[in-house]
Length: 279
Ligand code: C2E
Ligand code: CA
Ligand code: CA
Ligand code: CA
Image 1 (cartoon, protein in one colour):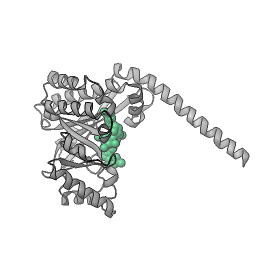
Image 2 (tube, rainbow, N blue to C red):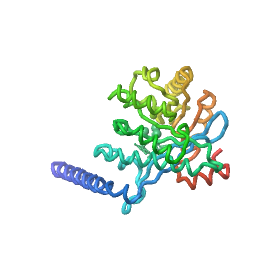
Image 3 (cartoon, rainbow, N blue to C red):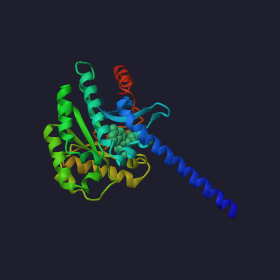
Image 4 (cartoon, protein in one colour):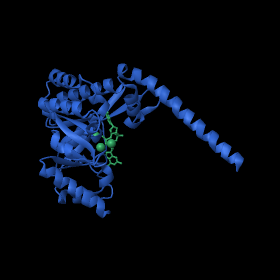
């Protein structure tokens, strides 16, 4: 038993060391990633439940790593947040989204709105709003084509400054969405105090919404609350037809999830939309 304990311990520390080495390596590689143009945006469509059309997509970053292959954001975004590199990545994301929007002008996809994810850390950047304005202007994209998704964390830290940043964004004409709604903090006062256009009900409520009474009640309540405040609602993580039926029945505005489509590169999205495969 003693030996076993020691082996377990060794195995554990080796595992930790390996992870730490990988972390350090990735952190070093992140330096190069922007210069080498290794990031890509994937797009996940949102189904408009009133019209049955795709009018918006969420941009989700991927890292085409030279040795490790295509990495999901969970592998490097937290790292980039710690090191502060997230600011530059965020700028790249905004610019890439604006370029895509510009590329869609004059095509059958010009009605699409693109939502980008920004972490609380990115909101700390005073130049953020100016950068977004400049990106929109240089690509000649109407600001209302761009949406920014933020999580509830921004309502507990730096509240005053975040409120100011959000108002400036909203004045610019950019839409604001609250991501992962419901998992964060119990205070809903911010829905009153901040200019929110959209809430995205977290996937954890949707996964069992047709099986669990409590998830159904919460989802229904969030939809009603948001609607009574003039806020539209997206459900995340929709994987089953029955979930879509539930959401339609309860007048949710938009649905996003693997049932409709996984996140895909722009070319794949255009092809799927062109063939009417997503609706
Ligand atoms: P998120 O913003 O909540 O994005 C939704 C995540 O759920 C995405 O994972 C998406 O691929 C996944 N997803 C979508 N539909 C389904 C479904 O039906 N079932 C399941 N199981 N999953 C689904 P992804 O792309 O790995 O992104 C993870 C997180 O990384 C995002 O969560 C977001 O917080 C962050 N992220 C992604 N792109 C960016 C970015 O450009 N900037 C920043 N700061 N964060 C980003
Ligand atoms: Ca999001
Ligand atoms: Ca989310
Ligand atoms: Ca999330």
